Image: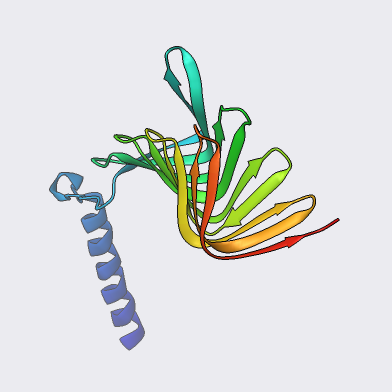
Length: 172
């Protein structure tokens, strides 16, 4: 008797659950996403002045948060078209749309001819054509190693300055 009573109660509960699921109306549900985004793969942006490409931005992944004037980037490359050409690479970063600035995050490399700078973060100020960081910097070439803290590179003037605690080793 108790087994049949148990099965009747279980059957009644299952029928009620099925009726609730079938009569469910999704018009009463409000979904409020807290972070709306769009994304893009293989982003390629070019910045031109006077019909000449000044610099290019490449990224494997780009995320465009709604309402923000920045793009979150992954696997970044920035090519600055000056003589000599400068290549900036990074794992991640942010592109500020309104200013045209790019902030690069760990790890960051700057390649100029046969030399390479390494640092943890870097900012490309596109309007002033300045590359800067306050982090530790390592500058390597075929016959030298220079380390220090902070970097300012004025691309148009072809001037690079390591700000403080500079140590240099020159090889033959």
